[in-house]
Length: 371
Image 1 (tube, rainbow, N blue to C red):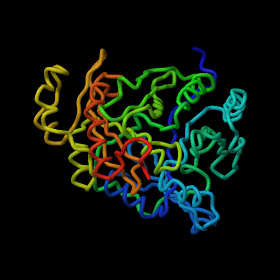
Image 2 (image 1 turned 90 degrees about the horizontal axis):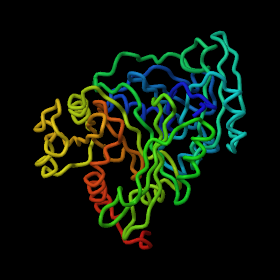
Image 3 (image 1 turned 30 degrees about the vertical axis):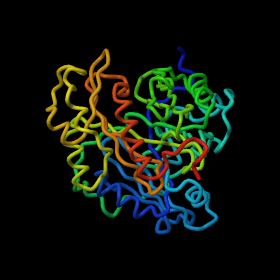
């Protein structure tokens, strides 16, 4: 397939939050990110405060509006703290933007160039699913720190909690019923992506609920964007719970890659990160199901780490509890050993764990009975 709209990589994710300073501290202390740069009142920005955090190749921006009329503040009021911007690095913002509009994208920010002493910083954005923006950043003419207006953080010492997370493996979006195929087809047509995997409501289902999912990736395989939508079930699915409390579509979870998941999970747990619980019976026949692996099954069982194998290798994964008060955004930690899949063999165990948490929150109700 011709790559009509090449993406060079995931540039950053921007979270809109109620208090960026406190949110940045949370990700520093619990997830091991390092503060790199800041933009706010002290740097001349009268509208918002933003903190850039980094770990390996991962870049998170935490932003808060500085008044009640700011669009960031309005987004937080509707969705709570959430991922508001998925930013991609591109070689030519103008060409990418033109191509996207030709394929039916909804314009959000036209191509914009900011001239500074550090060079030219170009960006544009289209409307993604829900209120999420897909942003496109051209960096090769800009030599400054991250983006215009940012200054180095006064505290840039490496995080005390070295977790070993080094890149974003995939970013998962939840959309309303009927919207999954529309977005998948858009990514394929406009961004030159390929359909990597498709899971129907028979694959991803429990006794009570189900969902459907498709995964697209760019031709290089570096950018993976799964998209979920609800499927009919006896009770409210995790996707329906998300859509209800997020007040619409958005980013459900972010998968962060590590090269040593046992070390990473130990560090995260010691810092207070809460994970979904896996019953010990899951490990009774693990070696029979997935074959030989390099990790200790006893250690995996102790930490609740899941394992799955596909035709190209195996992977290890674990999922956090939601990191917001609303049962919306959560994180996955993943270590790949050749596997290109997403843990299909773990779907049943994972969904049962999620349903246990839904029930604890009072949200696993028969369809039509959720307040």
